[in-house]
Length: 236
Image 1 (cartoon, rainbow, N blue to C red):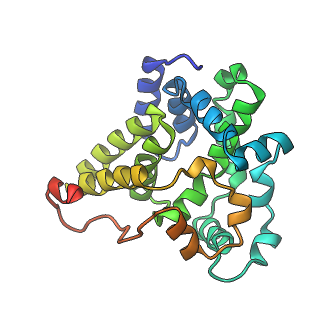
Image 2: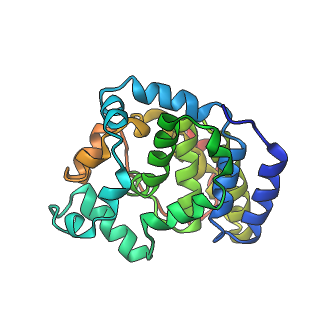
Image 3: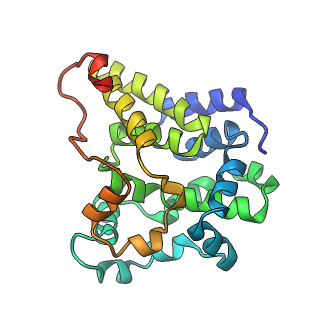
């Protein structure tokens, strides 16, 4: 279990608000507020057929996500092709997440090998979550994905980033509809199948529409609301 460090998280949140491009602060926050979320998640993961197979073989999701030739050869409309389109369009890479996370890696030295593998898999699958949920990689999309991620992982860091991100976006845009959208993303995370336990390597070749249906993701509009909306709409 990682010791929670709320003061460290608050400082990192402040730095992230000042510079949203400072991705390393996201990992500082996640680790400062993780508590037993990784240990609990890894135990649940190990109890699934996919998790048991991944842990036994030490399978590395990063290898599949960085093989752009293989991704380009997947069928049009597949999860893997949609992922490749996203990272190329946004100018991001799976390796970039690795580099950012390693800037704040000291706390993870206390994890068991299986817990560390589970944590890396969560990190590496982040942009797949963007694709499946339909949220972009712009600030609004990132806030919604981290809101979705909180009930999926139990990590308070996701909740903290979602709240601060929603407040910052609403303040900068004057659009109170952001809160309803972020709340809906959190509720969607509760309804969806458990993303951390997915066999993402196998799902890369599957049609994205099938993946969304099987994971119980209802992709409606994912754009930031154009006008302020009442908070109650998210609970309808």
